[in-house]
Each structure stands twice: as structure tokens, then as C-alpha cells.
Image (cartoon, rainbow, N blue to C red; front, top):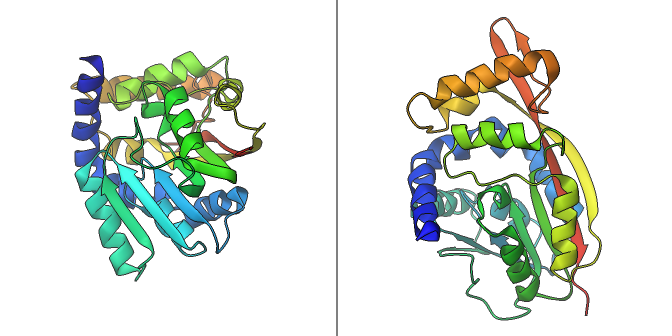
Length: 257
């Protein structure tokens, strides 16, 4: 029952977020996409699975350098956005499918690269999703996860804020917990790249759909964080605008034999 309720929350949020999320500067940022593709070691012979592919931005970035990219996402509106993007860019090596990620509907070892960006904090059981990604990745391939990774000391406050902003949020994992998931999935020790994704509070809230009253609670948390960085997002106020930077980690692990 809880999983069904959570699926409903995701579908509700991301059907409404499909356009604002896919057009947000930080989500579309070409430098961030380039960083992800380069960290993965992707090349022209790779077949890629993009797990919870959203509006297809990651799939399109990998399609420019790989043989084929398959994307799967629970939200039809996101898949529609992704297909429109692939058509607009003339990418004929992208296949996008509406579907759940537990279990992934693909054979063992079907891909050489399995990737997921900005989705793990929405999963009720991220470890199970990672194990599925490892299962469908062939021996010698790579498994890649990119997501917000709050400082352990600030993770509780960060996640409270994110849950208020987006009711489909579950929990962003601090980096040590993310690394532990890879070990539990039987993957090699991941190489880690960390960076900060710039955004602004008004823009963030404009593409979110919090419950009534929660947007102002989020604003209050950001205002309080200006003094002590309680959220771990390095918030700064300039001329009445609050800018900040999410902590992001990219983890890349080999799929051993």
C-alpha cells in the first residue's frame, strides 16, 4: 500500500513538473551533463540504460557518444518530453519506455552502462534499484549514480526541507551511505566526483509543487540557513534573492565478473 501511495506521489509531482523540471537551467546545464558522461567513461560501443530517465536530458547526452540509449521512467509526461527532445535533436538511437524500475524489465547483462541521475532520493529502496542496475549491466560494464549527497551532519535538515518542497522525496543519502550501497550490491569501489549544482530558491519553488503552506516553510528554512549553512547548500542572499548550490556526487563503479 505504501509503495502504491508513493508511486501516486511521484506521478502527481512529475506530471506537473515535466515542463518546469525539464527546462530548469540547472537540470539542462550542459557542463553538468558533460561531467556525467565523461565520468562514466562512455564510448561509441556502449549500450546505455538510463534509470528513471525523466525528460530524457541524460539519455540525449549519452546518445551523442554511445551506440544506443534506453530510458525508463514511471511518468508518461516525462517520457513524452524525452521523446520530443530526441526527435528535436534527430537522435534515432534512443528508446524511451514508461515503466517501473523494480524490477527492471530487462535481461541480465543487457547493457554495458547503467546510469541514474537525480532519482535515487525518490526511491523507497535505493539499494534494491542499484542491485537491479548491477544485474542488467554486463560484466566489465559500469554502474553510475549521480544524486544530491548532503553532509552527514546536515542530512536530516536537508531532507526535511526537500520533503516539504517535493512530497515525493524520500531521502538523499550522504556520500558514505551511497558508497555502502555499491558494496552491498556487489559492485567494485566507486570512483567519486563531487561538484555543486547552482540554483536559486525562487526558481526551485517555481518548478515544485509543495503542499499548501510548505513553500513558505521552505523559505523559512533557507533564511535560517543563511547564517549557519544548516542545510549544507551554501545559501547566499543577494538583492533579496537567495542563491544556493546543491552538493552532488557522481559514483562510477565497474561491474565485476
